[in-house]
Image 1 (spheres, rainbow, N blue to C red):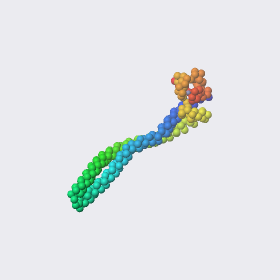
Image 2: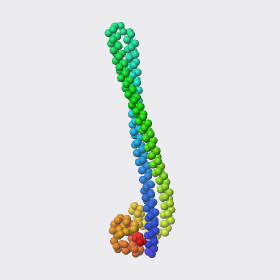
Image 3: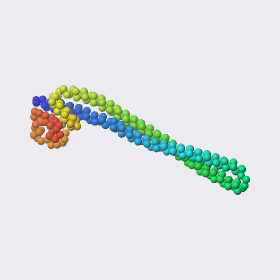
Image 4: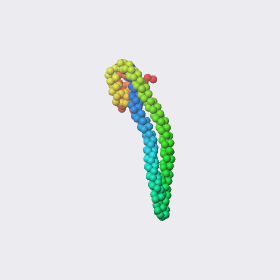
Length: 238
Ligand SMILES: [Zn+2]
């Protein structure tokens, strides 16, 4: 084939375009997963806040339980106080007085516990506020990263459209049979169909290319492929 050398040169051009298309498509293919990973790590950041909010609810419940307990203890102290004046003997009176004191002491323990809960509640509320601020920053970072990814996808799509045009301009200059062979290899060999031979080595698989094969390539009579990786071989001009 007289113009095989020319055909190979056009294939090299097409390969340059196809390699870009392949790597852009690969990059684009990974983007949704990248966004998902970012989202998952942001969602995981929210766990701490959820836990803190649960702690707050528990503390508030504890506090209102203790407040009910306090009210009931105060109520019983009051009742005892009323009964106190109806008692006839000193012995009964003193015993009742002791009961009232005990009830008041109980109430004061509960009161201390309520104060303790209130301190804890204040502290947890402060932690929640800080956590919310931290999450807001994380959310901003996440949204910025997400936008960056989406912008990149748009950029890739635009570039792919250009490359597709470029491809359509190159293809009519290639012999149909050669193009079919090229595309078959492209499909089967990770989008690399034509490779240069350099220092007796196939640049597709790094295996040795014998001198007689190099001679065959340079005769430009037919397409020569690598015996190991099956890719089309060519020799670059000096
Ligand atoms: Zn090879």
